[in-house]
Length: 469
Image (cartoon, rainbow, N blue to C red; front, side):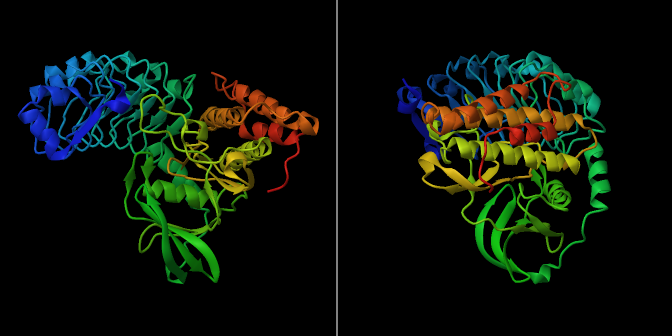
């Protein structure tokens, strides 16, 4: 049975099917959600769910899993967030198809790699009390490892460097007094979140000492809500007679860091500011943490964020794959590449590591039809994973994430057909330039990776003109 033909069940219906087993009905399920159910254990009838590929047992009192879970041949995704697990159930190591596991906000004190399948690719265990990673080296194919808000020290985290395929690591708000050198030199690591750790906090406080003072919140007049997410709301507002946007945090802990960390990174980056990032006009801490931002009319994300699916992991969802966002012209693609490179060069000069350079975190103002769009404005945005650091190796790692952004731009261009031959082959020249720079960003050693000053210079110096934004 194809996944799109499989049925879904949740809530009371899901409980009824398991407690009074309807074998035929269970065998037709592809998605089973027991999130929030009144369950202390998972019924053995789960073994009849032969087509289930996604199972959610979050927000329950379940503390272990039955052996029957290992008999599910198609189970790819298991979510158990906000639960009562004190350890990863060892039976999961016998789940052959499992690729994504989520045990965020449980009671884990260790993360034992021997209790998970060796083919796992996405592991979420943020918000626990994890202080050690025994046998983590067994998980060679994990590409995305989410461990923020735990108790890891530099020594305890160091074994994660043995994960060969690791690309994204979130370890914000742990107890890292330094970042493991072996991880910093990992050949594939591209995105890291480390804010809220002692070594990053020290660098941040030093940078904040020279940042501008807070603005007076009484000068802010909030208007309509423009959006929300990750514990914050964004409003239309006026400030000192100017139309602006205001972001206010109402939560504190997020998968990439903390409200305080994002606020601080924006404050440092906003002084003096740069035209390639969203302008931070001022910050405040009372009545709640927030900031006054430049308002950019008509801006949209340049791509869709990676979907919560095991086959995407760290790659953006592009229009050709059903994602949101424009399909860019070659000139627009080059303008985006130049702007993001310039933004990162500026941030690094201020000691700020972005940590989440992606096409979906790049705001564009389209100029023309979305199926073949130019751009009138481009800004690197979303500082949720950003932090101030003293270690320059982080700035080199950022080149790899930029390389993936370039690859996404190249994929968008290739999906719109072969490069145009008019204009002296200008479109083909753009693609050739982006391909060459992309290859430089794929180096497996820190010494081999370019700085963003070098990248910005290479992209700007070529004889491929792009109109000023």
